[in-house]
Image (cartoon, rainbow, N blue to C red; front, side, top):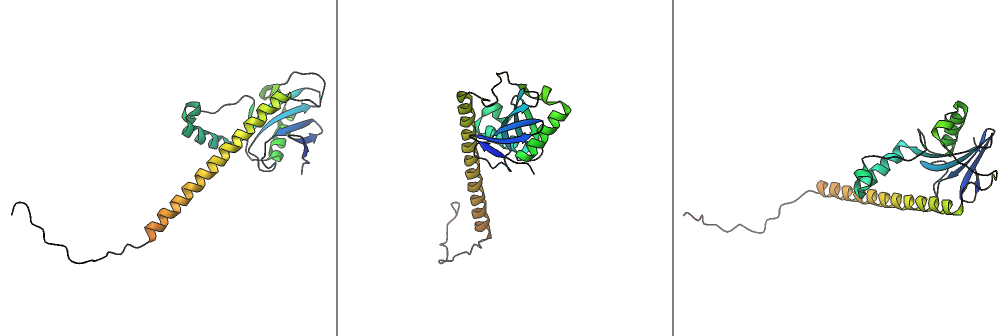
Length: 182
């Protein structure tokens, strides 16, 4: 079990080989499916990466198909992307452990140039941009959840209507009609 601390907008995991600072917005740290992460390695270098699960990418593509973004959801990309099989900071931390162990972090994740101040990973403007992105994502997910609830409600209504027997009503006999050729 890993220990996840908070520091302002960050969820922080300290490991013997790195310190990872996760930006996840209002998501639950154990179920989040995407995160922007700054990793301070034991050698003092910093790396940046973005985690997504395949399911989260699928939801983004579906939303973009409706909104017309990215060729109507025909593609998804982000720099420094690492796809994880499971959601949550613990799964993402395990991925970082392997990226560090294998040294794939050098190729897969952007180096963040900077001074030796370990406390200030991002400028206030960058933090604001990331928080804005997280807020827009939360709003989009709220919209998707509401649309899904509406579709489920409509489907239930259709099922209810289909299950309701239709009883013919007889109000009398129909009047005789003359055929135009007679």
